[in-house]
View 1 (cartoon, rainbow, N blue to C red):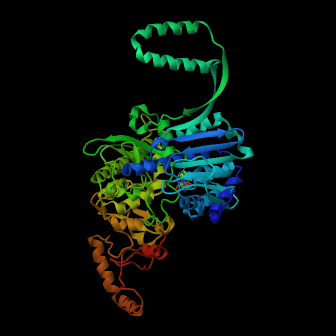
View 2: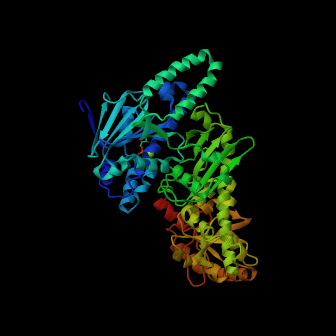
View 3: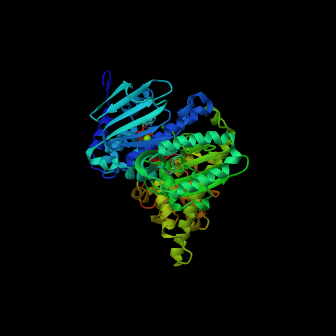
Length: 624
Ligand code: ADP
Ligand code: MG
């Protein structure tokens, strides 16, 4: 194009496009889902803007918040067009090619490990999947604040941008033109497109139209007949009452003699979705399959949700919600946990999408939960900043936390029940295999999130602690819970003992636990980096104190032993003194005779108020 500016893709984007365009990946269908999802996002954005500034929506056709898809069978070009927010020139450059996105490299990494292309949407690079089916793509876009531009690329490492002088005036929104590859000709048929759109658009909240060509029978004199009708209508207006009977008679005679017709191809817009929000339906009327399909639509996950809940909250603050726990944690959920922006639920106010990154809706440690919240109580025509101040959000958040923790608790309870029944050999009314295994899967993926919750969410600390699972000296291979630990506690045992370290073996063989084990106490083995931080926040559980086996003030002795200790202390007084003197220049704060060891001669322990060795190790590596 004359006067087009050329830009280089950022290196990683270019690599990603190479992989996509040369991909032999068979499920190319996903490109349409990604484009529809982008169109829907763009429509959400303009609708949201128009809440506070009506002029943004424009008038006439511009107010039609819809998506249209059509095909030119001759040139094999596929079109998708939305009346969304559009992109300015600057945004075209930024969004479709040059900016460094952490998602790109993360996705590439996954692909190298043999990951599925299907995941692309989760990495924020879904647009590029268009190169699975097209070798040349043009994006025509018009934003309210700019002129209409064309972005174009053949995925050769660069793209061009020019002011658009050749296409129809879009008014506002985006038109994507896909020049289909030779091996993607299957997408040049209406039937295929209809199937795909129906599959992917079911839960899109905007109407999606597909242009279809229909063969219709047209009477040969159709044109003349139309003219006549018009004249009749004009006459009718004047003498309506009298005419009615006569008209009926006329129609009857028309039916009697068949008229000559000819076949004509007509283009029509077929509405492919009924875009009724699933959360407005009664839970009893929604099937499990529909819930799972909706999950895939809101989460961009292509696996199934582990579990979900659909409820309606009443009272001062009214809202409806569907919440899902994914089967796997988002790929970067635990990375740079405290630094990065938080994902959120999709917030709607009276069916209008508002935002999907409002951290006021759900706490960070539960932000892996996917789903929607639709409230009738929140005000619709306020800015985002004002909305964030709404007191109602606090109430919603509280209810959501409770609902999520309930979902998790139910899975945990099913597991406990299954275990107990297995041990007792009972089978009647036993939860299904799936239900029995759910909590194990959940904890594997989200156990760390629960631990982060113990640090973050003081109000729910005990509830979260109940959900923890770990190995102990009495349960080395199977995970166990605090409740089970308490059931096994010895008579007179006053504390829950634990030791943290880098592996189960290290902790189990540690001199710190020797004495405890010899006396028959159970010791919890914490082996995750996070565990010791968690324990710093968790002082007790069900009024029983936690005690760290590696701390100086661990008190295990009974009266008889205390007396013996005293004797030993006296006996070794000189040795202790000598030792202290020898180690004077070291960082040791004391030398003591201890009863905590059985076979190990001596051990270096942490002071009561100091960091444990394990904590020192963690702080040195800053592993999370
Ligand atoms: P994601 O949708 O996860 O952000 P994509 O690769 O699908 O990632 O899209 C990249 C960006 O390009 C979007 O975030 C959006 O800003 C912009 N974009 C893509 N398609 C459209 C569209 N139809 N209308 C407006 N902006 C779009
Ligand atoms: Mg997208």
